[in-house]
Image (cartoon, helix red, strand yellow):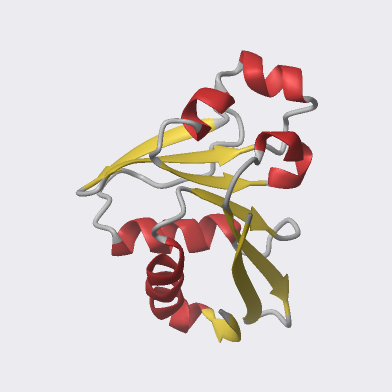
Length: 138
């Protein structure tokens, strides 16, 4: 996917990225602060029928949500300072669970991202418009 979108189009974008990336369990969301990573993750979870409250796991590091296809682990690596800290927090166990993992701030511990990763890159065009680019990286 490579397109601009507004918040009014986020449900369509969420459905399209899920269709494109659903076979890749690890999703890495790259974007500056305030660009809409959590908002997009919320829209994807909503499209999957998640009824749990979807929010950024900034302080908890990981939130778990349930949908008909299993678990989704929503991670926020913003506060992680090292690979060792991530391993102590049990992050690697979630990554190897075969459940879907949505990761905000994956660039903070890139060594954890082994194997195929569905990368989503968001950028700010203006106050109402974002650009999304997504692809699978091996």
